[in-house]
Length: 336
Picture (tube, rainbow, N blue to C red):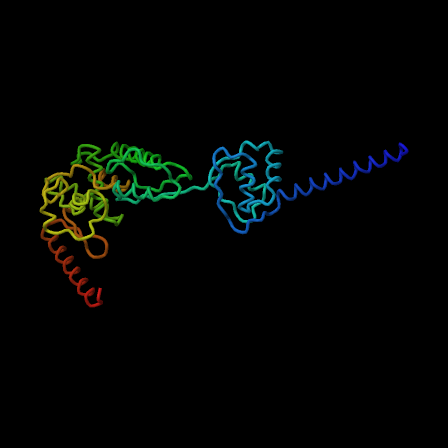
C-alpha cells in the first residue's frame, strides 16, 4: 500500500476517533446536568465506608441516576471520589447526576426530630425515645426525674438515644443555672433542686401557658405561709411513680394515703420533681408574679378559677362540682 494512502487512512481513523470522543464528551456533559429518571423524591442511606462504585450503583438501584459509570467518572474528574459523605439523604424527583453528587458532597443529610413535651416524666421520655425512628442504642444511664429539658431535639439517622438524653440533661442544667442566677430575692425555696420540684408541680397543674405565673404565685404564697401545697398531681405521682396517667379520678382514700408525695398531708415540698418542667414553668417559679391569691380550682374550660380567700375558693369549688354534675347528666342522656 502506498505510503500516502496509509497516511490518509490513519488520519481518517484519528479524525473519526476524535469525532466519537468529542461526541461522547458532549453527551457526557449533557447527561451529567440533564434531569434524571427519578419520578418522585426518595431517601437513600449511604453507609459509612461505602466506596464510589458502591454509592453509584446504590443510587442507580434506587433510580436516582441512570448511569452509575458516568456518576463515578464525574466524581473522579472533579477529584471528589473520596469526599462523598455517609448519611441519610433525600433526592428530589428528576435530580441530575451533578445535583446528586453535590448533595453527597455537601453532606446535607436528613434532619430528624423528637419533641419532648413539657410535663412528661423521665419514664415517659424514655418510652418516647424508644419509639423514635432513626435513633439507636440502649440508654446507659437512666435520667433522674426533672433532669431533662422539654424541647424539640434534632438528630441524624444513627444517633444514639443516650446522646439525645445527654443533650437534654445539659440543656436543663444550663437553663436552671441561668434562671437561678437571676431569681427573685426572698423566695421560699432555698436550692435549685427545690426550684425544679416546684416548677414540676406548676407544670402538671396547668396546661394553659398564661396561667403558669398565677399558679406559681399561689404555691409560693402557700409556702411562705407554711400552708400545705395540696396539689393533686403530686398525689398521682406518688401512686404511679411517674409511669404515666393514673387513669381515674383521685379518691378521698388517695388523699389520705401516707406518701412523701402527698402534699395534702405534708407541709413541705415533695422529695423530688414529679415531671420534667419547661423553661416557662421554671421561670415562673424563680421570678413569681406579685399576687395575693392562695387557691385555684378547675373552671370547666380547661383553665382555673383563682381565689384570695377560702370563702371565695369554696364558691369556685361549688361551681366546679355543679359543672361536673351537669356534664355527667349530659353524658347519661346521650348514652355516653
